[in-house]
Image 1 (cartoon, helix red, strand yellow):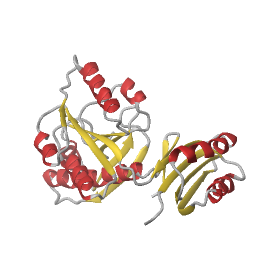
Image 2 (cartoon, rainbow, N blue to C red):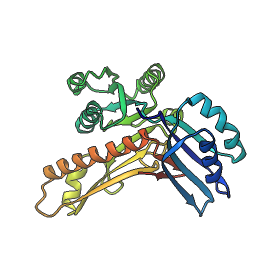
Image 3 (cartoon, rainbow, N blue to C red):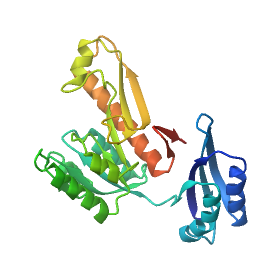
Length: 283
């Protein structure tokens, strides 16, 4: 049997001795490093690191207390995770089910190390899809008048279910600044990459009318600035004059599903570190 494995992520001001300090800490505990990646942001003098290691006779509490003094000495922002623990992920969706279906399927096959304790929607259209995967479905309707109450229900669910990540899988509601601030770096959104050129209804038809040759999708962390949060992943597909608006919609949905699943996977594996308005990705 393999030893228990953990992931340590670090961001801090760059200075000599950082890699040595982390390595020495692990060696002293008999740990075996399985994978290590680092990035030095020379422009802002910031250091980022992700270390996946295995070790016998240790636990998160012991490793955390042991690493604390090192982290303090180097002004580190850091987290330690059990690598095999599934990430508890709440999925929000409206009427388009392609991203939800993809996430539920990948979870069911084990290709995504997440656990979906609930699906939340402002419509009932996808309740049967959630039921097919035994994912509890919560119908929370949203109007201009009930939006504060609806978001309060959402945050209550996050707390009650120990949710670690919220995914907007084509959830067609704008979250309030207060909700975004309550879950910094813990909400991922997906949308087509025609923004800001083609806003509003039928963006693919607008793109068709303009003769667009590339369809794309963007996954990003949600911030109070609408659709301007740090970008995690993007995907594109070339099209041509023969591609109808309906075909463009289908291509776009496929890209959205793939891009969102990669973003969720990387987040669940602690491969994403925020660097101001950017995201450091250790794929």
